Length: 152
Image (tube, rainbow, N blue to C red; front, side):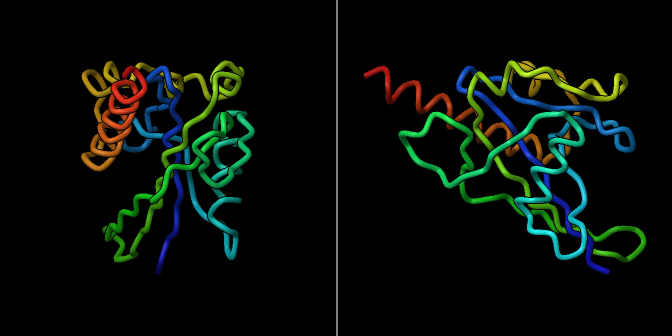
């Protein structure tokens, strides 16, 4: 059986990233979950982010001059074979959000440590799956390159 999931790594220009501790795995990752039936991935992504955080995202194509929510392409796909024999495919989207979304109140379960964290602090202190760590390092590096580029 094929199980499709989506997740989001929401981050800001100020190097904050939204993460939570997964209750089953004990690892930090972005909000996400299962794609229902024939649901489009973007719909599943916005639904899961809303269900887990209370944040309402409006997804759009990436435009360099757009200051609203941005999807950074390409998405990152990881395929895993589960102990049950099922195959799980997770598509992770790296999404830059503006400060308005960053400062919305999170509606989340108290025990999952959902919050906005400094990217470097999260990398240095939180347990993560190797692919999640790599994705977050790429976001950090992308932000650092932008700062260097725009500082000239």
